[in-house]
Length: 291
Image (tube, rainbow, N blue to C red; front, side, top):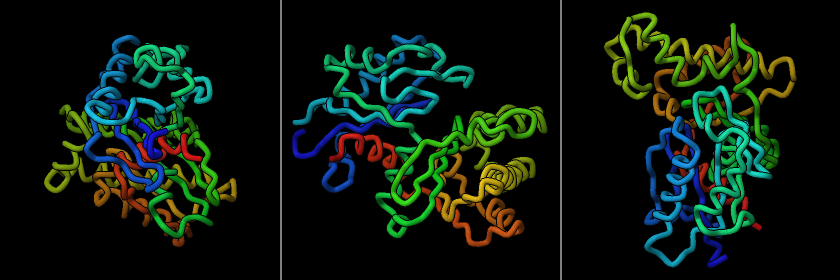
């Protein structure tokens, strides 16, 4: 690969971001960044062609080819074979059962062997841990909070995909309480009003009692989910790095989560806001090609 430069892509429920990544220096090449909005409920061809367009835009103009390509994408997904297993999650339903690696390679006019996939939360955590010093010997949990709930664990440098999203909680599963749709649903239920995003709700929090209440409840729920999952297992993480769009409202919920953990005896657990933003997943995905 030319000068250790590869393409990293971060695919979320509403967007794709692509950027060239310098694997020697663990950094993105800002001039190559391209981001566009995705309608995750479109047909398969439209979604894959939109991804391919974004990947080409990152490479053109410039001296670097589109591949090799490391992609961070949410699960469930067969990451080795590149087959989507996403269903019932209000996104990418049309991709279920398809070999995304082969289809994307054809759209990019490259070979499938030049494309690798990684769980988006694992890529996020890998990128963050490469940036934050002192986590090498810790048990670190990474959470991405947005249209879905992503999780991964890095235990002494070994990163593994998590499954916190599907943990039974309340009358359904954890993701339904720790994602953007929970805020939108609850705000509509309590006020009869429709809010378009968590970002909009955060702007209202200072003067809207319902909005403030929802963020406080979210923080307490996050702590409860974490304790429900890790307390009995005896492997409670020492540090928790939180990213995703909801994390942009950090000051509205994080202290309530930290306080709830402290009240249950977990005063040593550190909650850390993500430092790299979406660059973490871009770098982590590109690390699939690091030797």
